[in-house]
Length: 250
Ligand SMILES: Nc1ncnc2c1ncn2[C@@H]1O[C@H](COP(=O)(O)OP(=O)(O)OP(=O)(O)O)[C@@H](O)[C@H]1O
Image (cartoon, rainbow, N blue to C red; front, side):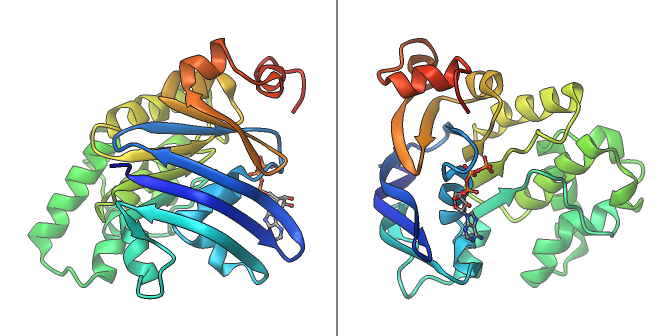
């Protein structure tokens, strides 16, 4: 079964029809890259999965989105529960102005976890998963804001992993980072897909090619082509895809 199944989804912001009849099946433990020119609807598509678009006043949608077979927009779905299963990492690292330790335990404390041993274990485990443990283990009480940008982004990933999601949504997670930090995030994505299903929005074609199994190319709100990443980048079926990946527009 697909981990995520998108069926004939349309999205509108007021009268602006920003996603048009999108269908997509996403297998577990895969990385899917979402590419396309600015404004084509990639971030809107990503935000469907944790229902973040619900926060936008004039957002409307139709169609169905299933997570492990369950309609995530059904009336009995608790959005807070959904967001534990579907974590999100943003373009700019956004750690809280708290210690490294408190950043990672934030979600668990909200869930009512108080056992110090459980929290300590979650901090080490999540920071290890995010490939940050060795750099910060001696100084977990240090402010997260004193970390470098790349370290802050890995801390934000650790913060998301601490609440044990199934899905990771990443909206241009490396675009604000230097090449070394970017390489670390890409390596991390590779590691994390053993355990998680990952969707990543990126403007960086090389990055999409390096990290993803599948790629969806969007243009003007339509999913023009969705296929194995290798096919998209070597033998795309649509001229628009070919033009985009070769830099002829966008
Ligand atoms: N909060 C909002 N309210 C109204 N319209 C919005 C909102 N967010 C995005 N839009 C519009 O929806 C369309 C798709 O935007 P979206 O941010 O999803 O595209 P994108 O492909 O992620 O763009 P970029 O690559 O520039 O981030 C655009 O026309 C945009 O102006």
